[in-house]
Length: 216
Image (tube, rainbow, N blue to C red; front, side):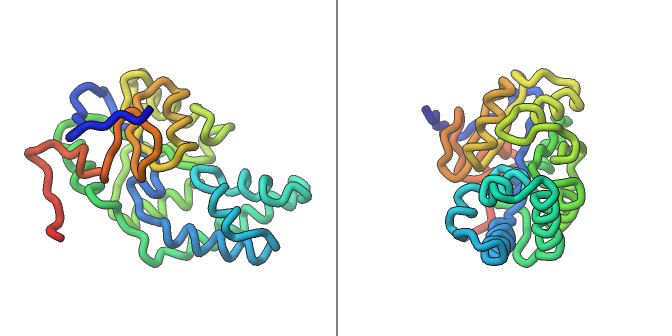
């Protein structure tokens, strides 16, 4: 069951672990464009691809949508898809509240990390485009099993020197939320996903003294 809070606080958590795409970085339009292009090229339904791919590594989505491909062809198709994403940065930016939140975490000394299904190159490209300098990034290349497996979140907690149960995981997909829960963390959810805490945007986590909402 999703639990809501007027203003969730960070004091109860030793560290914060963020998903990247759709959570810290607004890359939704770029991701959709690249996957629609892939779907057309590989002759699969675009809407089905968009329903399947959130939170999953590219190769997992390719294998699921084209089970007829052998492992080498899956790897080649995933690499081609990532190449599209490397070069499409149109509209990629920090999500609402993201820059204020990471600045507040830096001032407070509370450790944080990014755990993403993107590979190292794509993670670096998108974080830079969003103006976010993450102290720790656990990318797809750092784990043997992607989300919803908890390996990435457990590894991030270990790199920060904290227990997963003491972390807040912030996600925007059911796949990522499942990974956070399986790691033993508390999960804060965006976009209405089922989570322990429900967020409108990342401004909900910015301490009162640091909060600066952009006027509408």
